[in-house]
Amino acid sequence: MVTTLDIARRVGELVRIPSVNPLQAGPISGTDGETELAHYLADKVEHLGATVHLDEAMPGRPNLYAHFKGQTDQNVVIDVHLDTVAVEHMTQDPFDGRIEDDRVYGRGSVDTKATFAIAMAVLEELKDQGGPVPNVWLVGTISEEIGGLLGAKAFRKWADNNDLTVDRLIVAEPTLCAPVHGHKGGLGLEITVNGVAAHSSKPHLGANAISAAGRIIEALDAEQLRLQEVGGTTAVGAGTLSVTEINGGLARNIIPDCCTLYAGRRTAPGEVPDELFEQLSAIVKQAGAPLDVDVAMAYGAGSAAFYEDPAGALIAELCSLADSEPETATYGSNALAYPDFAGETILFGPGSIDQAHKAIEWVDISELERAADVYRKLLSA
Image 1 (cartoon, rainbow, N blue to C red):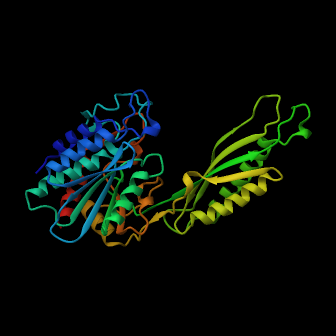
Image 2: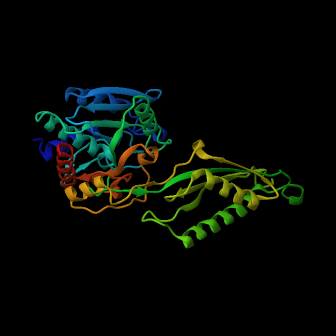
Image 3: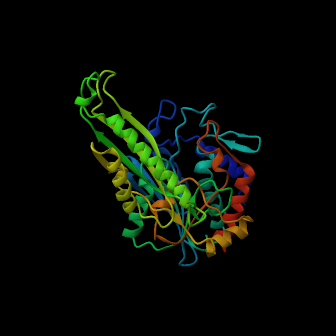
């Protein structure tokens, strides 16, 4: 059996391979993205007997699909995103992967390289026992942290094209080994207010785009208050709406002829992104009148919320194995790319989301041990 300390060392090895999402790259991280990590893992899993496929989800940024043949027809997919967030704000070496104070430190240690190390260790053990019981697809995806979940979407397309029927999908996230069965989806509004420039001494000769943007913000804030008053229908809670970017103005003595805004709408279970876009566009245009306002959906599409019945069989099994309770999350994940894809879908993994994205990131070794024990039993049952 691979020891917990061996797994911790393997997490450190993966941390030492930078895989910062190219959209958040900087001088410390370099610009190679997930490429080196994907090739490193491909070599590792191939030596464990997996059938390996590297799929360029984006030019120069491959997904990894590793198939471990099982003893039954059941297919279990473990989706682990390869990319991490930025490291430029970190106060220690982001890639040292050191083991200290019963923790593994470094970017990606908890979000989510720990799961890849655990899964490979367990599959190595099961190789000596004839392999896992279900077919296991260990999937490494790009572009989860930012960029539209393009890796998960590419894997889904590949799976559909190859007639892969998925019985159980585990999306790796730091959940403290509790199965997470729901979280919000989202859509973004890119808003452009079109005004007319004029000399600031004669504002009546122009049309102030920033003033109209202020009315739009006020209207969207009112919609956010309404959402909170209505409340949610599930444990995921109600949808939310926030204006998070604004830009406008040409000079201090010119009436602004343009102002752009970004508003993010988190979707609750049961809400349809396209319908919400139409509703919010109407609110925005009415508030911005009489000025002309353009509204576009960011990334071209929104995501419905992720939600599974907490009484599902996989959730019950994981709760029993990990001595935990089903939960929901406040953050998003690759699960948003997989509606109606698998028989059952959950988020699961070691460590806490509270340690992710911070200036110092770590995962507790005790969590590695706990998650590894769950995977041993889950994949040999």
